[in-house]
Picture 1 (cartoon, one colour):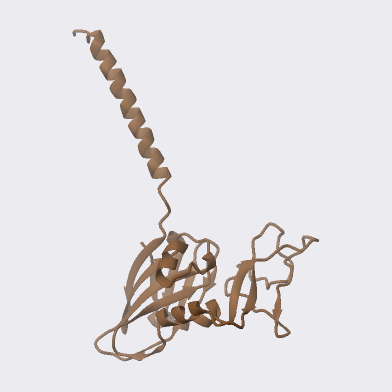
Picture 2 (tube, helix red, strand yellow):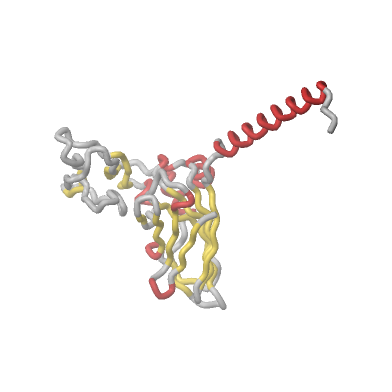
Length: 233
């Protein structure tokens, strides 16, 4: 078998280098790919069909409603289509967003809870100086502010103690702003309406949840006997 000429060996060596560089660049691009922040899902039961688009990125949320909502909310754009001309009742409390990350759950907020005069504001709760739990959050009208569904995820009430000092929890306060907030009007105009209908209805749902990945999220609708469960792609 004849030996390769010396000049061909140089070509093969250069090609190997180029191939290795291309593989390294491809691996870097795959690793550096941005996380998925918008997903869609579709599901149905005997009464209706749901088409949902979920938004995680604050910039996308801002394009929808004119505000990023402080980065504290996940927004779902939902279309509800009754089947066979049936009249259905749309109730936002029938929807629940759940994450596999830590089991946190949330039902959608009304526009007044997100941006009204008495809007509920999410923030990280500081740890007590003795390391024995969370400091108690602000109060409103003499009563402690209620915790958001899913905060904390271990079931401990805010200010209840017993939480390890390195666990991130959420504090809730009520922003008692006397001035009307134009954002509330926008959110209310775009929200999924609650009503009886036999026609398709569309609107947004505002879930108080943050720092989640698309693959971990699951949207539930309805009771056990007629439930729709959506995973987003």
